[in-house]
Image (cartoon, rainbow, N blue to C red):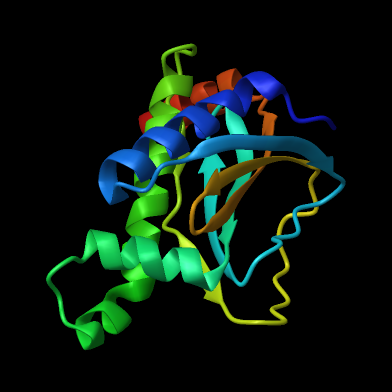
Length: 173
C-alpha cells in the first residue's frame, strides 16, 4: 500500500495555516519522506484516527520545547500552573483544528465526509507507541522553535457503497 500524495497536501496546508494563525509562530515547509510504518521522531506525539473514504491515522510529532511554546501562545495570560494542567488538552485541540481543516479540504473532493477520532497524546522520552502498521508519508515543517513532523498513514476505503447499502438495510430492520 502506498499513501497517495494528494491526500497529504491538505495536511501541509492546514498545519501551516492553523499553527501560524492560532499561535503566531511562522511555519516553513520542509522535507517529504516515506516510512514503512509510522514512528514519531520527537517526545510529543498527537495521534488522530481518520475514517470515511480514507482510513488510517495522522500523527503529529514535535519536541517538547515547541509544544510548550505553542501552549504558551495559545494560553497567553494563564498562570504557569494552568498551562501545565491544560497542556495536553491544548495540544489536542490544536491537532483537532489542523486535522479538521485538512479533512474539510479533502471532503470537497468526495461525496462522503471524513470523520476523525478524539486525539490521543503521548509525551516523554523513550516512548513506545504501537500505531497502525501502515506506511506513511512524513511531512517536515519547520518553526523557529523546532520542527513539526506530520505522518499521514491513510488508504482509500473501497467499500463505502457497500457500507452505505448495509446501513440502509439495517435502518429498515
